[in-house]
Structure formats: structure tokens, C-alpha cells
Length: 125
Image 1: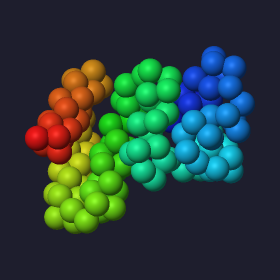
Image 2: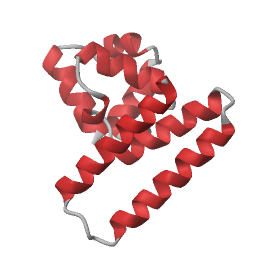
Image 3: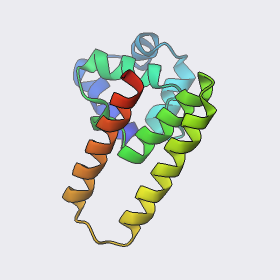
Image 4: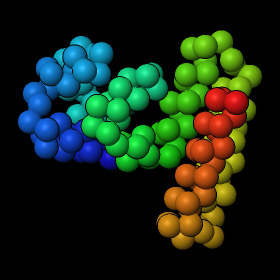
């Protein structure tokens, strides 16, 4: 999802990969890897730069479970290992809940959006 969305946004703006790499604060090869689907940004800061530039919400760039992984990696980088572990555990429990197939896709997305908002509020608060 991220690779396709990023490529579409970049092309719609008429940007080269090199130009977007500068905007995102990454090197050209890293941006190329994003668009090839090889990897996601390791830092939420990079993802925020991309979302801000294109004026789109983070959720439109990455799936909710990828967003939680990015938040978890941010917590590790800032030394809040306990928060990272708790967030990862929560993500695993939510994933297991949805694996049972009891929620529709739209209900699942609403739930993950609500959880994303709660996580953000907890770190802003």
C-alpha cells in the first residue's frame, strides 16, 4: 500500500524521486526502496514529512498495523522501551482479535483508527 500510494502522490505532483527524497530527508536509494515496496520508513519523522508535504493523513500512507510498528520503533529510539513493548503487545492482541474474522473490514478499520488516535493522545498527553 505505502509503495503504490507514495508513487501515485509523487507522480501527481510531478516530482522526481530525487526531489521527494530531499523533501523526506532520505537518500535517493532509500526513496526508491520505498516505492519498490522493499521497506517502509524506519522513522515516523520521515513518514510525517511525506504526509505533511502531500497534505494527507498518515493512515492514507500506511496500513494501521504498519503505523503501530512505526510508533513502536519511535519509542525504542527515544528510550521508552517499556512503552514500545506495551504498544507491540497491544498490536499483537488486536491482530489476533481480527484474525478470527468477527469484524467486517470497515469495522476493523474504524477500530484501528480509534486505537491509533488513543495511542497518539497518550504520547501527546
